[in-house]
Length: 168
Image (cartoon, rainbow, N blue to C red):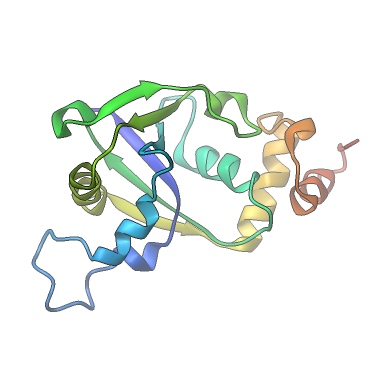
């Protein structure tokens, strides 16, 4: 079964241990905020042997306006089994390898999002802290995974220059 990453979530919205009223396996309604769709479409990335979750999340973080903590979820999912239309679509991050494993979930309904939330809730959620985000953006630029010319925000450009190789 394919493994996917949904980046830019807030891990605390998915945390259920302190909600004794929540049925086992249920997902808090607040988690749905992390599944905001645009034009009934939601973005996911597939894990591969060459592109891991950290690389995906850092590519997404590098496109943010400011450096900050970034949460993400890793989960097994067969979107078609949930009645969800999935299409491969070139991503828009500064990492070509990450862009190649990008998918759009299209023509989503509220029920699709609820079903997807249950699948994501059964997976793993994690957070990369701001200081590590900055360090990993620098490392991504140094390795060539993050294309320096596609870094648009000052913090990411500055981080990329910290490796001593950056020319902008």
